[in-house]
Length: 184
Image (tube, rainbow, N blue to C red; front, side, top):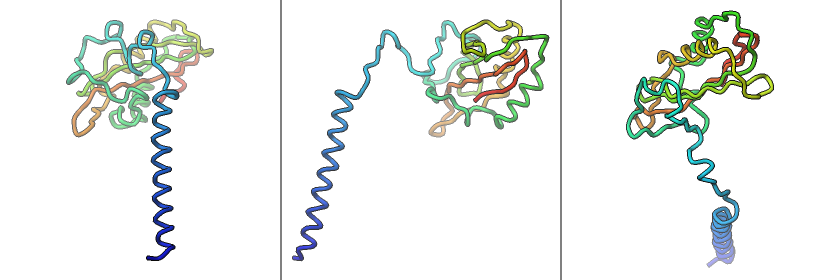
């Protein structure tokens, strides 16, 4: 047998053993030292959780299946809009009327959409330009809630060929009562 082949095979075996050892060591390190403990008492729910007891419009529709929510870490910005985000923005701007509002800041809607494309379970977070929590005009917030909760804006999200419930959010940047930007 050729010595070059023996050296090559030995090198491949040694490198493979080293890679497996490093991988196993990294896993052990992560499990025992690198992973952060979660304070389950302080944070009992998953990211994107909306409390059904305090959510608005939580009695209009039902969540499908066992109530599992998809897209909880970042919402569903590419999957959520029926048609597309541009159509959503155009509809919002067409239907929103500044009725003398002078508020500035952000109005953030966090909500769930069920497997039929029906939104509900809204949580509203209102902040000013300095990102401090405030209360904006109830009438303006109510108008934006009505527009945002219109089922004609929201698509049915499917995963593994099954329609699913999903989490989404929409933030409106407001200056002197006018919508300046719609995020995401």
